[in-house]
Image 1: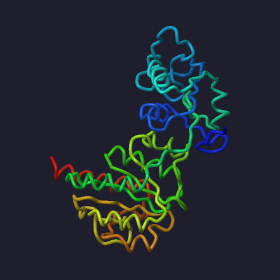
Image 2: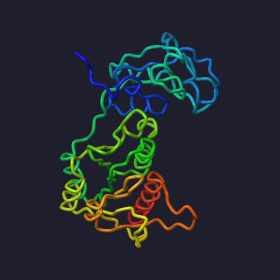
Image 3: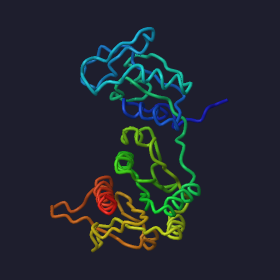
Image 4: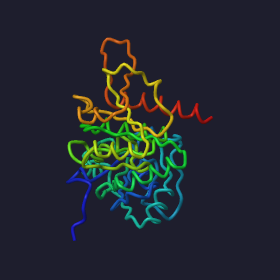
Amino acid sequence: MTRPLLGNHNRCWIWGRNCVLETLRGGRWKPYEVRVASENDLAPTGKEGIGTRLHDRGTRRDPLPAGRGFIERDEIVTLCKSRDIPLMDDTTKGLEKLCRATDHQGIIAKMPPFPYAAIEELVSQLSNLNSQSASPLIVLLDHLQDAHNFGAIIRTAECFGIDAIVIPTSGQVGVTSQVARSSSGAVNHLPIARCDDLTETISQLKSEGFRIVAASEKAEARPEQFVTGPTAIVIGNEGVGITPAVLAECDLSVAIPMSGRVGSLNAAVAAGILLYEASRQRMESNP
């Protein structure tokens, strides 16, 4: 029986120390297999290799003395064993050939499709949080195209404790190997749901008491006008911004004040600023 994959050929692999380790730690996106470079006589910079020989499992070997750049051998072995994930040795060139990337840091994992959260269950969970006065904060992405932007937004959202991310099923980059890599593995630590109609999801959220806030460079309101109740922040497409149908459903549009000559920010940077401001306001209102 053919197993479903995250993508074809090299696109079914995720790679990099943080990305793979956080996937193993998260436990909800189970790899089919993990491969590590056995020739770990690499430069001890934390950027090229995992720093220990994983194929020699009979005795413990401490990481090379370069500090936080290396993975503990035992943690990888333990996580793979506890989750019944095959762990195999390979060469650095072998890993590069499989994932088609030179920045694999000596570890890659073969992945099934990403386990998106069901939108109906997510809305129900957010409703429960709201009923408990938890004031959930989520992000809605309106047809982003760039994998690096998406991954960076996921990473920022996880760092600021955002409760979930919702994306459209079509016309939006999904969770790919590059998105997982750009998120530094944060895709494993917060729910990401897909919906067929973003405006319909917004209507559902509004019925649950959410305020929908759009990020728009044409808006007059500033991020200081965020509310501390349940809020969904909408980030638009890199080129055209938020679609008119979605913008019409938003309760408030905010713009980030800028004084430079370029006059615009990319989606990931704008999202980071807005999520910081929303998180800051929540912390100040609940010290």
